[in-house]
Image 1 (cartoon, rainbow, N blue to C red):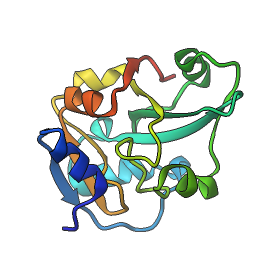
Image 2 (cartoon, helix red, strand yellow; image 1 turned 90 degrees about the vertical axis):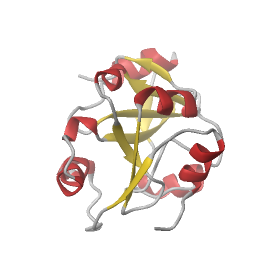
Image 3 (cartoon, rainbow, N blue to C red; image 1 turned 60 degrees about the horizontal axis):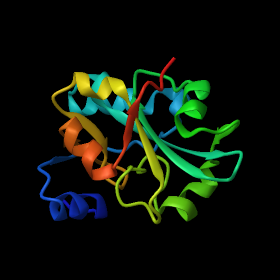
Length: 160
């Protein structure tokens, strides 16, 4: 397996992780349950797969949110978390230029710039969670506390 930037960052921090490859079917539409299908391929509970959502505030700040694949982000809670009046997901065609990642391979680790990151509080309910490894077809399994530390994330209630 090719080592990704996310893996190099974790190794540099001395954080244990397990990388897993899966067959990428090219379908990455959130509305179509891409993260839940990925959980099935990896044979892990879908609530342990944490997807990465990149959003832009009304002040043009980019913020990163991670939440379980089984949940939907609550925009009101996202606005409260980052202290803004408006927030919207960035367009898929903007993702690569902003983060260095494409939809289906976006991870909260190692983006082009350091963005404020928020992780849903349900993460602490799990011994291990899966996040994108930084490219399609690779997931990283990691302890929640290690992900929080590596991303310097704020843990808060984000879901409906």
